[in-house]
Image: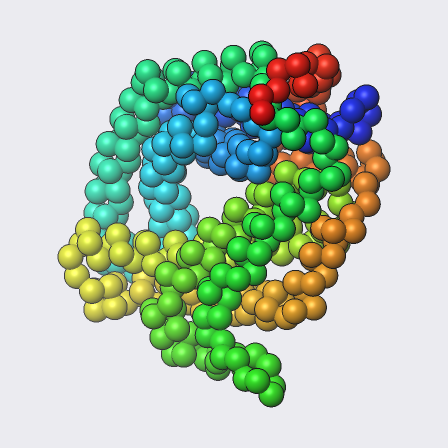
Length: 366
């Protein structure tokens, strides 16, 4: 993210503008590629841009006075269409790249039939995405963002220094993350000895996941929201903060793999109309192996984040943060964007922020 510390002011409104502009530009950059329908990576990158745009809108909401067409609900509607298509792409890539080569020929034949059906679903989903991106609603949304970026309007709190509001922006989402019931899947609390983790043998893990995978999926989504929110403000913190962000990203990934295995299983059962364990025993076993391995990788992080010391440490980092230097900040770009793309985009955004800074108070609404 471009460095605002070098500008004359460093307000809540400055950072709101920078974040909205950055992620909106990323979204637009991949729009034509998505409509071309040739490279799934274009869809992935546009979806990432929209997710981060939604996070920026939510994270900076107290400062933002966006037009109705450019608010979070409008972005979410478009993002859902992209998400449905992306989920199908991920499922196909996972089957073809990970599972299919390891299956016996008879199971490969059966799974390939399911892949054909998956491709039919993708074609329908792509038509919906194309319809969405050429709709009047989408056009109004982009016009709304363009107008706001040209002449941004904010609420009065936008003039407050960013340092003042950082804890209030980060701690509510962090609290939702720490209080999520998914942390206690496979865990019991003993008043004398603390947390007791259930045995990590395969049958026990399979039973836990069959019964409580929904809670872990919900925790994964909370982890994603927390990670995106924290990444908005990485520049203000140091290595300890960054390590927590990495840990949360790992949690999101591990729980995502578990959830993906259940979604894949449900798709195959629905599409082929039989029990996987009986008709695709090798495939079923590999799904179980993935779940067990991800569970084993997840448990140390589960234990770490359940400890009060961890939670207190992260809260204190947020409350007692110190500005990091420009040289440190160079390492906090989005993993999805190349460094050259990010540098060019951020230079444009920073210039725009500079040109609009003097107008924040004049354009503010109460």
